[in-house]
Image (cartoon, rainbow, N blue to C red; front, top):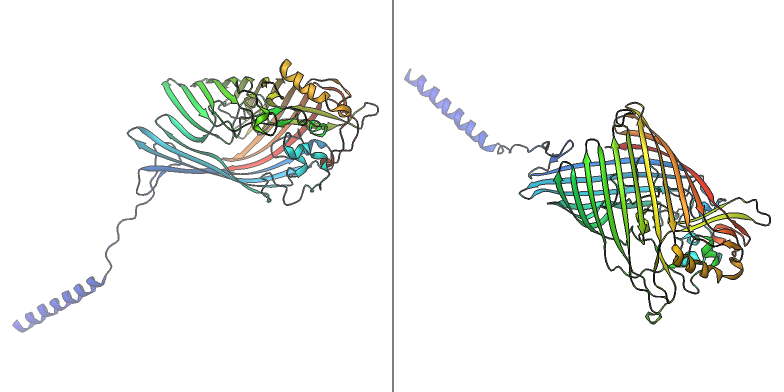
Length: 523
């Protein structure tokens, strides 16, 4: 028995020894995986970045646009070459775009620290805007439009809106930090209405109010007073989106071909000196929103002529004021809205003719005038004009725009929208423009009424269908009328860049219609 007991204990000891040896060969147990956790502090879609107390949300959209009767994406044929109304006018323009935004937020003892980035990747085809003979009105390239250089076909690979030699384009819409009431970086202008350029539409080119769809560099502070009341003050970069032409009308800078393309002289701004100063007050409550915005802008010209010794005009400040009103859930149906805004500017015209709206008009059409080849409507947006020995004469504008949106069902809605803007050069500015045109001889001798003032009216209708959440199909048609104030005829030399011959053209109001079809998936 004693022998059996010793054998059993010996066997057990051996098994324990073998088990211990095997255990020593096993890997150390891994730490628990730290899974991504939902962050409910800032709404749906936020998650904690593993190992941090920062929450992140990714978002964006994929959008496809097809536009009829326009050479630009989301704008009408208001300027060259699309408005030549000939074989250089696109039957369609096509764009595909992916948007990506990154929103991060961290709770601190000073409040939430937020960063926001929004970038886009776009591919636009058949966009006839890179023709060197059809550069922006007011540029030195454009004033030489009659030079007769080669015209590129609309389908040429280099005809991209980016001007980069390909149809692909990368853009940064927003990039800002928010902390303790401050906004620092590229964000929506504090002057803009909450709907930026879109009170109810997809069309980009509405006049009648300020709007920065792609954000503007700024240093802003917003104070919250409770009950939906807030106020903001801001210093904002004026160089990218807020500067209209500061036209130098000195001798030799105004040409007949340039005028026939909607250009008065050359844009002759000096270097940047001061940001724009902006303030706003907002009341945002359950019934809707009311906002009042003001802005001041320094207009700083370069020189009358080439060298410094030719002299220059003194700086002149411009300003703008805007009111906006949004009424929610009006009695016509659940979710229906009415958005309206109105603006007045003096020397700060792009707070009315916003950065995606036309800055010049050169629209060709038919004519019934005997002896005239065609008609043309001409107009130009400016902050001010000057000539050798004069100061800056500022330009005054006023405008309004709005939209009413009705929801037919959870899947369908329709908005009717419109805009109107008026621009006046004033007695001083009109005299300078007309004196410069009178000096062109035969090209402008047929003008019977010289008046650079103009009005623009727009009306549109959009219908949206959302068959499933975050997928929307829309059709947006927009009509634009240019009411220009010149009368008589002009006789420029050949406009070779748009194939217009040297001929007599009747000065006449013009119209254009464009259609935007869009499919967009938000995520």
